[in-house]
Every structure is written in C-alpha cells, then in structure tokens.
Length: 201
Length: 205
Image 1 (cartoon, rainbow over the protein chains, first blue to last red):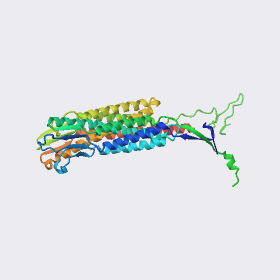
Image 2 (cartoon, rainbow over the protein chains, first blue to last red; image 1 turned 135 degrees about the vertical axis):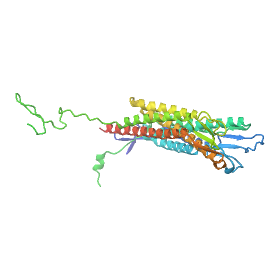
Image 3 (cartoon, rainbow over the protein chains, first blue to last red; image 1 turned 90 degrees about the vertical axis):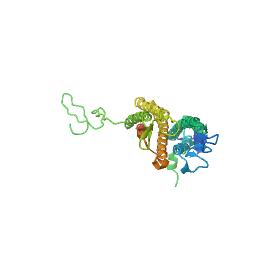
Image 4 (cartoon, each protein chain N blue to C red; image 1 turned 180 degrees about the vertical axis):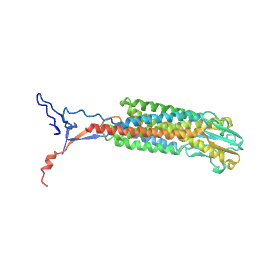
C-alpha cells in the first residue's frame, strides 16, 4: 500500500478530512441543546407583592415544572401551571441527536443520510423550542398584566430569552448540516485483486 | 414455423405465422404496467393531513378551551381570544400561537402539495413540515396541558364544592389536530424514504 498525491482515481481509497462546516453544525446543535437545558432551570416570570400586605407569597416564579413558591406547601397554593418540561426535554434529545448525526455526516464527502438526519432533527428541535417560546410569551404577558391589575409587581425571567437563543442556534445548525465538501488528504492505492489471487497461502 | 419461440422472416411470396420470443428485439411491445408511486401518494396524503390539522388548529382557539360553573349555576368559559372570568387572572391569548402554528402547517401543506409536481421541492417540503409540526406540536401540547391543569386547579378548590370545570371543544380540536399533524408528518417522512429507495433502485439498473 502506498500513499500518493491527493487525487482520486479508480481503485484508490480517498482519505478525507472531516467537513468543517458540518462539525460547526454539530457545535451549534450542542449549543442549542445546552441553552434548552438551561431554560429548564430558570424562571419565566416572577410575581411578588412589594407592600407585603396582601397575604400574597413573597415571590411566585414560573419554572419549567410549574411554579416555585418558597415557603408555601403545594396543598395551600393554587395556581394554573405551565409545564414545559417534557417538550423541552424532547427538544434537548432531538438537538443532541442532531449534533451526533452532524458529526457522523462530517465524515462523508457528499452530504448523505447522516447529514439529512442532522438537519431534520435540528429543525424538529428548533420547532419545538419555537412553540415553547410562543406559549411562554402569551402566558408571561398574562402574568405581567395580572400583576398590574392587582397592584403586584412582576417581571420577565430569562427562560424565554434562552429558548429563543436555542431556536436561533438550532436553525443555524440545520442550515449548515448539509453544507461543505470533504477535502481529500490522500489516496490509498489498494493492491489489485489479482495479486492476492496468486499469492502463496 | 410456429411455436418455436423464435422469430424468422417470412419466405418470399409465402405466408408466415409469427411466434414472438420473450424479450426478442423488435418483438411485441411490452404491455405498459402502471406502477403506483408510493412516495407521491404519501406526499399527497401528508399534504392533506397537514391541511386538515391546520384547519382544526385555526378553529380551536375560537371555541371553548375550558369552562367553569359556579355552584352549578353561573357558567363562564374561555376561548383562545377572550375569557369571561372563567380563569383566574388575565386572559391568556393562546389564539396567537395556535393561529401562527396553523399558518405554518398551511405553508407546509402547500409545499408538500407543490412537491408533488416539482421534484426539486421535495427536500424543502419535508424540512418545512418537520419545522412546522415541531412548532405546532409544542404549542398544542402546552395549551392542552395548561387547560387541563386549570380544570384540575379549579375542581381542587374546596374539593370541587365551589366550582366545577371541564375542558371544552377547543382542547378536543387541538388534540385531534395534534394526531392529524403527526400523521401527516409521518406520511411525508415515509414518502421521502420511499423516494430515496426507488431512486437508489433506478441507479442500480
């Protein structure tokens, strides 16, 4: 076996450099998954009573699993919850799969099946996160309006911003998942089949 | 000169009978067989299901998402656009994300239908459908979850002695739309896989 100049020819096996753009796609998908995970751990809105005279809890924060009300038991508090844990986790899984598929797709010259899987899973993750952000926006707006109507204070948390950042990263990952071509580093000439056929055993 | 399975030219001035050999050059024209393009059929089915899901999603916020009855007498309800005091707090405008999701599904259905004629659009159609169904699935999932939690919260107050609540037809429509949309996406994905398989088979011929 000999390694020769990087030009493909019949019978030669090209040694390819992984496609850089698709590796970037894997990085973007990983970034989107990380932001989606972070969005599960922070608040959507926080509402509190600045006067402390209404008997309202110190602070009510909407989080992925419902709401966080320090100092109050579940049985003494009723609140209509928005739980985005499951769709958020599904988006994280899809984006992780997109990153893995993009890495595998980077080893092919032409964009193949792995690149298609990477693109579609990144788009699915982006779609889920966009849907979560849309519902968070209207629920958060309702929280802010409700607080204003009841002389309470409320403010947005970082959850929606993180989810929107995840959407942008996931869309960028999808856009780059099928781009680029591999650079041929070398071509390995394999011995002809006839030589093996005549070789002593 | 018959029944031999081979063709021979007729003798000059004579008559001849012809037995066509199977696959002989110049032989009897093969009867064209109509083959069903499974990928194309599934693309149309997928487009139809996405269209149906878009319609159901667009209608859902205009119907009751949930209703609450107090002491079995006064009843109030909430849609995706307005709330006559059914839910505690401000109206949550679920109609906005639901209508946006319906518009995305409509666009995806249009792309899938156009891809039936334009082969170059097939990849774009599948990608658009995946994105649209992703948005739509998350929106309907959360709206249904929120409505169900509201019903559980209201009926939990005073063990249901003060008020009773139930989800409305909007939640039912959203659930149907979710199932229909996922079915449409599955049809498009299987259709795309069939397209790839048939393309690979043609490449081997």
